[in-house]
Length: 344
Ligand code: CP3
Image 1 (cartoon, rainbow, N blue to C red):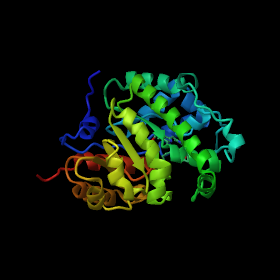
Image 2: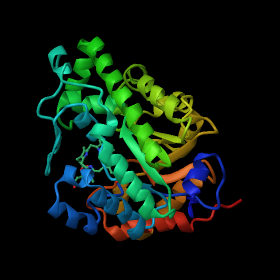
Image 3: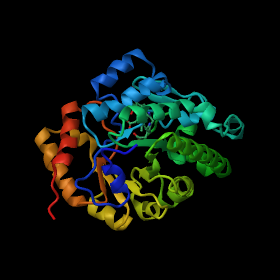
Image 4: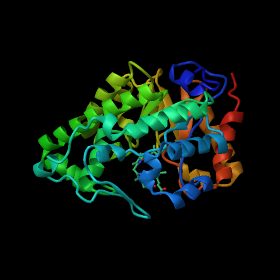
């Protein structure tokens, strides 16, 4: 199927396109009233596991805010679920894993599953989404980075510091590396099947990469991300988003990933120096800035796009969109990118 809008893919392949492509992390979610309607009726994992619902939610931001890419509606925590852990999503509390991994005994409950048996519903959703998108925009598949998944599997819930997950790695490094390798093996198989089902590119979310020192980031996160990229990059462009891990942009670029996400705490110019000239940078609008008046959003989008310059940039937020962002502000962000003219 020929894509009608392939700005994202051409940018990832190094082409300077007629304008900068734009999408928003967590664009399929609670800021959309149309999503909140489905949220009243169905549980979170029910929405993930029912291809028709996942498809409908994936398409919402394409139809409503006009982004240049769809991202699969699912969650990074379907992987620990498939590996044998119970995962609950509790209103106003976020994810809870009631039986987290604390020792070798717990690790015996974890397996590297057959992804077709455990995550087949995701591949069915992707096939349906590709059909319904009908070539309008590319589809982004995704998974969590092994380190970020370990954080939830060990801590058992969200955290500002993930100190228990870190303590597990620092006191039982052998177990930690066993677990990270199992997550990595599962993730490689999972992403390969997402691509086989029709994902045009995949993003690896390392939301908690920035909690680690540069040396620990290499040891506990990047060496596993590298394994994933090495396999996947043969088939499709890969984007790594390791929030707060700007110190390792050069090493992330060296994995062969085509795109690197950055958050709003680093200047585009400085990120470019660290990352080198070839890789595509993605970001880096402060998600909370979408709460400012629309003229401020428009002004700051212009500043951001001028700082990145034409080519090698995908406009995005520096982290997920917040649930309290008005839809017209999200649309103003997307439109400001679409209307921007780079001076040549
Ligand atoms: O980007 C998209 O719109 C696609 C869908 C998507 C979701 N989660 C749906 C979701 C994606 C790509 C994710 C990734 C994800 N999930 C990450 C990495 C990105 C990031 O934001 O750092 C993480 C850390 C998670 C784990 C997770 N899932 C948390 C911490 C929470 C609760 C807090 C929150 O942001 O809501 C979730 C739930 C979740 N995942 C929701 C959605 C739409 C909200 C569910 C609801 O209340 O309806």
